[in-house]
Length: 313
Image (tube, rainbow, N blue to C red; front, side):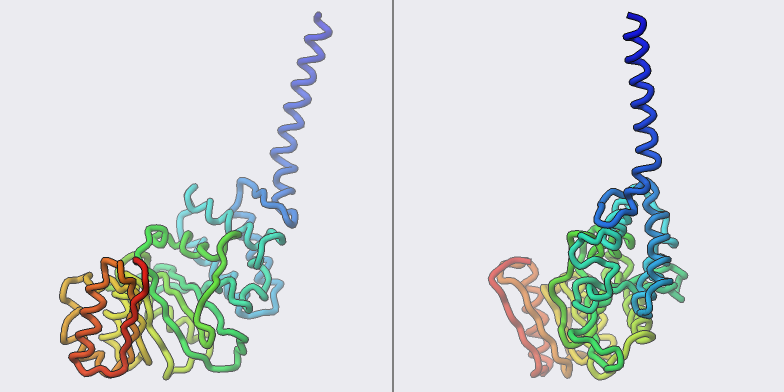
């Protein structure tokens, strides 16, 4: 009986030791294996080391800047358990060779399935901000291209810069559409601040940063946005008509701010601007967008379009 008890105890001790060795050593090694989706507890360290290594070893200056920009964002914000889940997704997207459009391959960006990240320290308040940028089809870095500044809609996850950055740098999410003939830039806009104040500043700063790296056709800059972003395109566009070659308002939440921008004065400023408005026929915002179209018509804008589709927001 004593021998049996001794043997069982010895087995439990040995098993515990093996489990300890596996969890502390083998799991850490497995997290670095190609094609394996297990990540260690110290995701931040693994991701930081990998991005630094990718940056050092890459011969592509844009990809280097991409990796450095991601690191800049990560290092500038306090990482909680919530943010760590997105860092894990980032790590897998870069490290797992089984991920479709692996984020460590430059071809994933050239094929416009992954966005480059650009980040900068804002001169306005010293906050690190960021934007996505998608390349034109058949991109030639020596060539000048149009710029499409796309303002995102109101979406709670976009209030978090880590989550925003990881949106299309995760294993399951890739981009399946953009403007083929030019650069598409998606400013963070400091989250969900309706592109006013520091949020508007963020849009302009993103353009400045883009122009440091990419050749932009200064006569072909377009400002477009959906929902809250449609409000932003209308509001910013009427204040800076000399910058834009055209506006795109997609189901714009033009009610925001009351009559601050949705009025005759704004339409008068935009009367020489090509404006494309599209909205679902079952969208609660349909009336706002029809009003914008009618205001432009009354102002004498002849280069406008109003399109409806069978659907909601």
